[in-house]
Length: 386
Image (cartoon, rainbow, N blue to C red; front, side, top):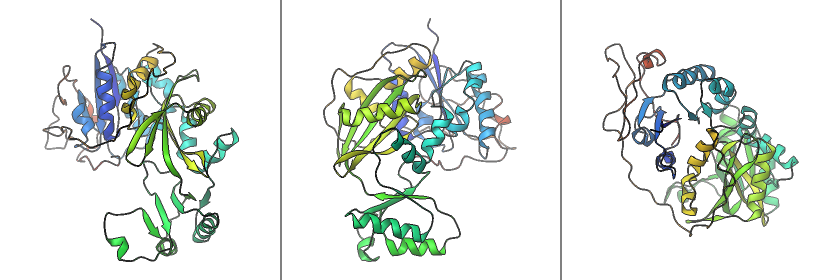
């Protein structure tokens, strides 16, 4: 009997329930056991996993590395797909390899580079990839200068934190004063410039914003799979134009993504996003993790999560070029089951359950020793990730 592949996903995005589904329904029929950890007890990934546990709270990055190494040793983890503390974990890749665990994350240096959007733009531009005009802003005067420069060119200014992800903190600046227009309909990303400058004057916190013209659609997210040898095995674009989604192999998007992946050692699964500025594709963002929409490539006959796991286990899938591109589509929400009972951290009055399991699948894995890495008396808090 073929032994199962043991995969661990730590505090990850809810959309990765589809990542997990694709691992289980792999074309080789290989059994897969998935362990998931999260701070949110209602995260769908906990219900979708074969076994699950709450994330330990208040650990430093170094402390989390020790926790992760311990968990991989206890569980015999074959492949670890980290999101939380990705850079710290990647810096200890060899320690995980010594346990027999392949870490599905780029090198720590690449993760650090693309965690700072301003530094990333400056560095990527040097290898010949087009980037939009941008200003790094830390105070009111710099903000006003950047907005004036963008508007003088006919653009609309927007800003976001240099270190943010998932669109957190993104705002579009308007000169219109705050009025009832801002209080009708759905909440909007538009914010009056006068409110932004007033907030900057009043705050005691420093800001580090990237200010740039608002980029135009289409948005193209290129999903890449790159081996540790630096060779790109897969690069397929997912297009977004309003509600309409589709796929592309247009070199205008694919070749810059391949260049970035090769030049900066973006090994394993990454997502490189582009939009339009002045009629030309420009880089918008680089995500050093699997995209939430990666599963949509199944519409092109691709099971990319399984290809990545195969590669991590030494079974090179080779160059992955889709035989066809799926039809245009729209994304709609749907229900997903949650755990009927929630995994709880141990307290002095609550004994630790002997097993934590969710959903159908192989026999649950004991979690003996879990109490040694979870702070006594604490409870899971709301997730920081969707």
